[in-house]
Image (cartoon, rainbow, N blue to C red; front, side, top):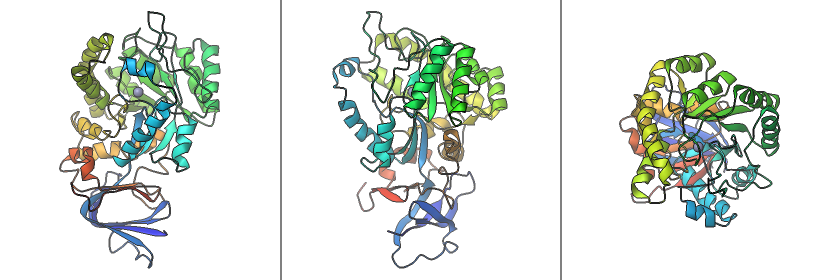
Length: 417
Ligand SMILES: [Zn+2]
């Protein structure tokens, strides 16, 4: 197939500009060749395949900058009894659901290794384009340490593609970063504070010293400019991470004015993962499998999280869409857009946070994130107007078509519902 012409729709191109009715998008092989008013997009040649979107809305493929493709839900007993390799087969379904929901690129925030990324790249399994962090660097007893006080260690076992992320001290950290980069990490994931779903810490606890964080940032920079993303809930952990020069703060539950100022100065991205908080709370109400130790911590965190995000948004901090999918079910990623509107963003701002800004967060702004000539052809069609109702995007029944790299990966035209 040489060309694909998407026509008869309103274009919301991801730049934040005005929506364009009566638009068309011409795709040639993997890339967008033209996008704009239908009569200005060059007439295709005879073997062009036309897709009439029947007055629908044409958007860029969405980008979720914080997912965990290798897991879903939290069920300790299941985790302990699942055969190691079964996790990879399960991930195939998670990736399919993700891309079919309109999310064509993701940043995996620990769990997915180079083989998972390449399985998608080589077309063995359908899924989003993946940027991998491989494993999360954690202090002993930190957010990435699954050691229980019974003495049992439930940390996911390391294997050749995925080293154990626990490390301590400047030299220990340096070696670990190099191991993670050797394994193919395109971004370094670190936990600079405790978290909700870790057994021996608290979200407010500060993890890693500034000199340990400095070494991570430095080693990443040496390695072709690899950035650092920091799971950071507690204030001091956030501050340490921003001061060390990390690229993005994940969760950021607890921001004060000084930190917001610092993030603005440094251009640090904020990834709110509002869906994680909502998803975990929903789970806690319905599932008996959520560990007791995590419940009071969750409620505490949820209360301050939204207010903190709203302040950061008002101050103008760069916000990229990330969900922590895996904590909540894969394929529900675009619920985050509605939640972002809940902190004050307009539907258009939420869409841009999930496309152009998210692409910038991945360092992929030259490749994806907008429907513009030269970009990779990642396109999502929504039947209903997401600017009138942002939540239209969370229902996959409203998404008849998803295109990634110029290939149709979801085509539900003519399917009822
Ligand atoms: Zn996460």
